Image (cartoon, rainbow over all chains, first blue to last red; front, side, top):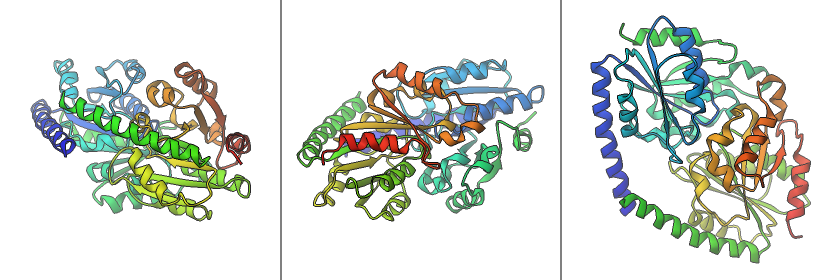
Amino acid sequence: MGVIVVERKILEKNDAIASEIRHTFEEKNVFALNLLSSPGSGKTSLIEQTIKNLKNKIHTAVIVGDVQTDNDAQRIGKLDIPVVQIITNGACHLEANLVRNAFSSINDKEIDLLFIENVGNLVCPAGFDLGEKYKVVMLSVTEGDDKPLKYPAVFRNASVFIINKIDLLPYLNCNIDEIKNNALSINPHLKIFEVSCTSSEGISKWCDWLISNTKQ
Amino acid sequence: MGVIVVERKILEKNDAIASEIRHTFEEKNVFALNLLSSPGSGKTSLIEQTIKNLKNKIHTAVIVGDVQTDNDAQRIGKLDIPVVQIITNGACHLEANLVRNAFSSINDKEIDLLFIENVGNLVCPAGFDLGEKYKVVMLSVTEGDDKPLKYPAVFRNASVFIINKIDLLPYLNCNIDEIKNNALSINPHLKIFEVSCTSSEGISKWCDWLISNTKQ
């Protein structure tokens, strides 16, 4: 019983900070996305491809969450945009106060689009509001067609669903329609993009959607 | 501060139950493995392949943990062995009391080898002892070479590391030696197996190791 009370208090405190961040993002016209997936689905690769595609079109920044290492921030930092790494030291998800602190170190920059790359985990980050406009959930086609049914919370809370690594489809026993139908059975409002961060297939369509959502 | 105290109490209670389960497993000569990976790395496929290979050699049973659905138990149940599904209803890891309850429903069976398939999550399950002999961590080659460095706790606590989906290596920009070196830099005592649950490559070597560890 003690645990439940503590958990509710954590969530209430988190939600209050998330509202404050959301207000800041709206005031500054920052379109913020909270990117969620398992480890290795391709969050960092998607961000890299997106930044390359949107270069000279919109100003992008990234807050990267990891349990350990700053590998992802180093990868993204090579693209010459504002990047902040959050290392959670074992914690399984980002919370709003971490994002608030991270954003305070880049909020003097011109930012149209902000990616918050969450910790690689399809379970725990789903319940934490980070002040984002939308949660974006990502799967790769190698992970199994039934994953939306097995991890429903993140699909229920997301607005956008990105299916990555479609270049590997010829080598897999994967039914992409089943992945989509499973996801839509959890959340019929999901906007779905199919991409390959290796071949760049589908990336321009995704970037068009991003451009249409940023205020320039 | 309150949260830390509660967390310590949960872990102490969990460890006490895990010790009790470990004692039961030892008494009954059950070789128990706690199988950990991200969603979609191939835990259920590995168990399916293993059971097919070990049929008529050793008696295997499976406890399957999932956030939602009993898809995995249904898949494994087709192989005509004792299977118990634990649905955590959103919780991100298995705890020892769940395993104790699950095992009580099959402990009248003859069991040499028990797989405890944890919730698909490379972060949270790492800290919870379930009474197993060994933790077995699994990655697929599609997940990125740096994952052991990014999720060190699970590699530190595991004794065995299985690298799955090696049939996909020709289609990926993956350096399997780097995956292994990264894992061994976290934990030099890891026993490593490279397998494909699609082509069955490497499965017999893994099964030989299982046989050598079960008491018949």
